[in-house]
Length: 367
Image (cartoon, rainbow, N blue to C red):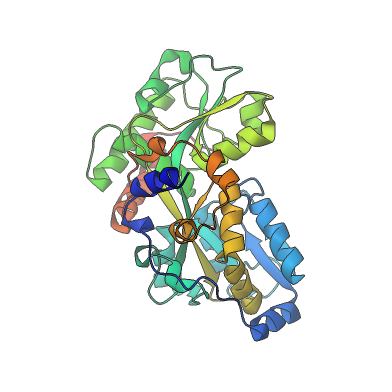
């Protein structure tokens, strides 16, 4: 089974290369006491069916006894950053302590002075290429864009981006977010651009916009944010989403309806998300303790149970800490062999084109 692990890891880029680890470290008693004194952690944009967050949140609460105030679970990365900005002077329940955002949002939020630096005990086991050297943000997990298909409705399952343009998929295709705010949706548009063969990041963004413009004009694009409920109900029978979301929805629906998760033949884009603490966090010690939990072996395996590949996956696998039953549930490693990991610069260029020109080029008000 380690061969499968090794094949999976070899399919990734430097963003997830193995590094030395001191992962046995634990948070200090002083930090635990200070967090418990604060008593509450405020999170934002953490749906319970995303990366196994429901169990991760429950595990944190059970271990440390803190309450978690969960804000707007359906918010996008841009919404999370705006929530910090809007609550700089607010110590009440609407001010998030922590955020979980797409990779490109970390450096921009740092540049705006919105993030508090903090290095977790397992810092050395996080690849250098996936963290801010000063500790303002750090990669947490990654996945690839996929087609999540309700096969009760869609009998001929699409296998590549070009397929989605076919007339048989009229009024079926949805994004799992608003491309003007959601990193998941932005990367989906970027992936469609990459599938055209475009290598330049900004041009790939433009190509992706043109693709979705055609999809919308053909009547295939549904201007609704696709979720497990809309997938099951049939209002969005094909949702372009991270593989871990699709796999989680599939498991939750338990065959009613049957769901298939397809990694496309081309335009396979992998996305790393990052964690950060608000510079204005009302509960800074609770926020630090949350980070310690997320980057512990327990927290990392919690994400893996939700089909997200945790950023410390290499470290855990090299030490034999990934249970065999979890490895057996992962998609075939071959599906990741063509994955492209856009750099921060490439993401920024693609994101700029997509978020600013979606309305004018595509014209679909996704909500």
